[in-house]
Length: 473
Image (cartoon, rainbow, N blue to C red):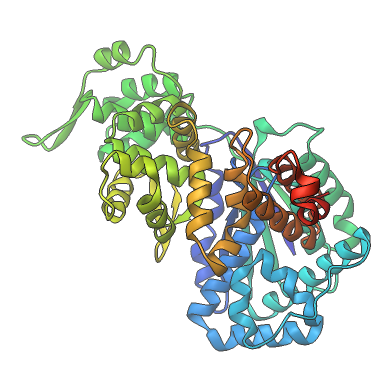
């Protein structure tokens, strides 16, 4: 087993480096590469979110590519852990695709906390052993580990130290080094893993990704402009380096800004790019950081595009067009502005053409970089005051069954962003989230959701809603 940590500042190319292995893994018969990502919104509140996304992607791909094998995995999983498979389906809803007619109705979450945690860890280990016995090799990339909850870090350790799993497994974790200090959960987890690698027989590799030097920035610009004369772009590279400090993502955004502002132009007659370095220096002397550049770019977009960016940002690092359409048709702000009810596909196509999002598969999309999502979230903070709360309400009242269950944590987090909200319905939803978190052995999250539910109860809760109040307490 291999564990790789890639660290560096935001935008230096950590995820891009991890993805360089994707084609190699895909060329191996039976090999799979999947990604998960922790979200700034979810942070440490939603248990296991980044890991769950990776496993959901793997199950979806197996369901598409080899359904018989997935059903065989599900059958063996049920034989090995029986009703203990139910908590796994809370975290990985797609796992139900592998279970067929198996019923989890006999599952019980009774017992002490330590016992529940051990059962949960054992179940996840068995699932991973089974998956890696069929999928060889399995490479799991977990991005933005600096936002991971402690339970997720413990689960990664549980999987990589599983001495009974003799199958090939690589876990790649990417994180922002400037947001992790020696007192953080991530730093402590890495130290613990270093101490255990010899005993449990796995390797750890640390990779540091740094910003580009002036020479590398010049190479990037030459590639963008399809030019092969280093001297002709050197002065532009010097300015670009001064403004971006060689951060690759910042370089790309800075060059895009120059093109939008007509400071870099393509001459049809000569079929070459032209620019005035002195004008660029003067116009960009007070250029803000890349986040502000992105925010400024978004602010100039049409009102309906801006609103969709904000809604998508609230839904997380990945989102589905079908969910966006549900929100769009029921969000009062969109209706009051007269935005078209069927406008979402066209707006998504526009945002994708602006290289802010990209398609994963089907109607599922993701932000091209977390800095883009952060910029869109900043519009939320400055824009419609109760957008997150309104979005949570729309999802709560319009999603049903599996869709509601799969989005439970997201919906509760959005609804609890509202200040002083009192609602028995929402308190009941918080109880569902607390119960689900408890079954996942994420007890800190369960406590937080229960407290949020209590805050939403009316003053006379012990007389008007005694049963619900008692369960929350």
